[in-house]
Length: 138
Image 1 (cartoon, one colour):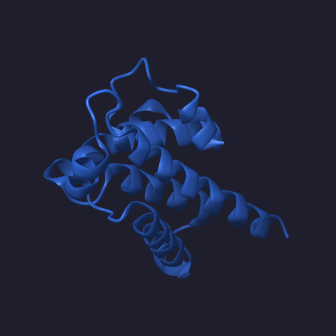
Image 2 (cartoon, rainbow, N blue to C red):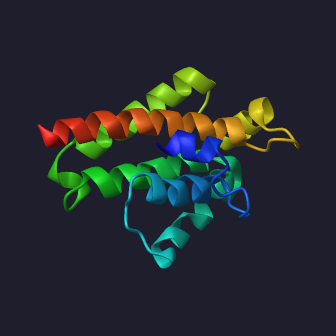
């Protein structure tokens, strides 16, 4: 789904930051139906919200989880909180951090940029989305 789409070059022709790449790609992969104005909401989350804080690929992933699994508001249940925690825990376990600065230091290169950071977020997001959609269909 998203991982495969990104791995196959989706967005390479655009100058997306990490958050934009995930949200635009997820819009395509998961058929979110978000228009261009809504997609622009991800723009300020790249580079760890421009302060090398929480990785933009993760913050965009949370946006996707909210779009898919929140019916009205976050407080209706603990679902979005639980899914966000799972996303962060799995990412931390796989990559060693959730913050932009240490991730860039460890994984970013001139040749590939933050590709591996983005791919891992997409892979974990795919796993959660597939599982949760199955639950919703039962």
